Length: 635
Ligand code: GLA
Image 1 (cartoon, protein in one colour):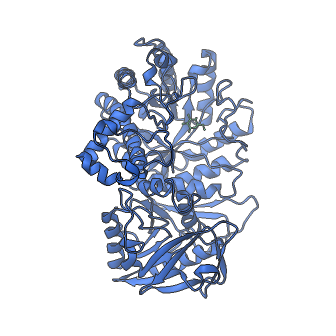
Image 2 (tube, helix red, strand yellow):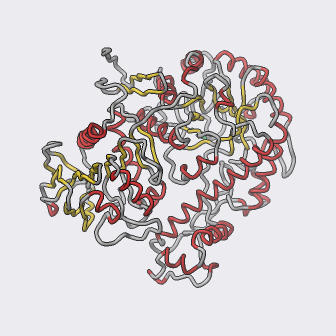
Image 3 (cartoon, protein in one colour):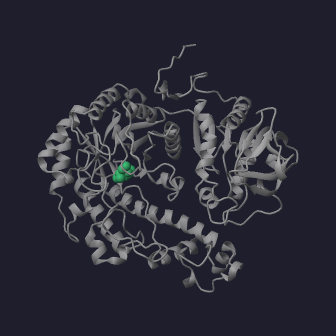
């Protein structure tokens, strides 16, 4: 199987999306001259070119793309060539309206933007496969071709009758018999029992709250359906070229597509990363998405497919990256395992929805701060090729699960503000600030190589995952678990007998009731370990059954109930946090204790706040996210 190595060939990839179809040919000459000046060695081409390549159904206009690829090659720039299928031409929606996606209320999302297609439509599929086949046949042996870029940021969900049919087939594979679906979905509730497969439909607009398992299964189906489209195009390009790696660009923590199930189908994983430069925690968010991307690829090098060199046009307030910030965040990606740094996009568009989005070559042209910084970055990266292929060691695994994410955010949960990614962030943040490198892991993954496992939330859990986590601790592992975990099974059936049923023995406790709280009624807590602190939104009516309380609730109906506990289990230790501490130092202290017990060390100790250290192979990257200067003393 080809890998990212086949594209890097000894150089860190550097460049961005290139959309020459938006410009007259004279501009192309300037583009390649400036690409050379900037040290660009890879351009992503063709992502949104479908209407230019197939102006009418079945027609082909490849001449301009031939020229673009030849021109790039002549100037030493490789190509990530896209199947242009993320955005069908208007003729498709007009001639075949059933290719347009439908909302849950039956209304249609029409053409005029992008991504407007029904992923179940055989007409869409056959046109998408046909253009992919012809592109693959024409360019598979082109010397500029470095990688295939399938589609773009898969994100379309549709609720039409074709999708309903596909959903039923998907459910038949999952459940077999209709009775088993009725059982899994709990259709005895509210007279929902199905007597015929034809009655089963997507979770469309209805009178009141939709069946939660139907909703959850549709989210799973929607991810699998899009993955099917990806695989169809991947197989087409692979049939034409066995030596060119294939990827698609992930969006990091993106709920619709379950990246654990997608990643094994790519030759390497790519990330589009757009933290908000005006957010003081943006560097943390960048690191977190990068760690996820590396983990999805099993630790292998990955590609930063997109970041903006300036501002991200989709933001309400599109603050640009300050001088030096694009370099800093590029180094962060390199430190966390990227073998290439690409941008959206090369030349700023002057028309269209993204006309205000930043670019390597901004509207101001080459005489600009942004372009000068791009040139400096290109030069600097040529000196860092020693990191290529090197791994990023991590002793801590953070469990991250799409099923739990979807399930914990279904309707009628005890607190609608309980957001999964907030929980992940709360546990990731102190580890990031302490310069402890984290991998992300699926709940059923082999965790033996990690010294510490952190489970910010695992609301929904399979029997296998529960056994996996308990077994990890029993054999001597250290594990920290956050609130509202172990509640339901994969059919969204509540596990009975006291929460968290599959983790009661592991954690040495039993919970009778969850106790969500309005924001203006925080809990007060007392603790020798953490000092007094408060917690918001969440409490649990909990009884210790072998676990040692480390913090206790001091007021209100839960007064006297422990909210942080530790428990020796088998040869290991588990900690449980039954609330959401409002002060960051509480989880920081707890994770510090857990790291000390597990023997987890920071990459470098005692760095000033805002300084990030990451080890990659023989390199240690030290990144200063502060805007004022800091001093670091060696030794
Ligand atoms: C995404 C898309 C690009 C572009 C950028 C703008 O990442 O893949 O096509 O829209 O966002 O930020």
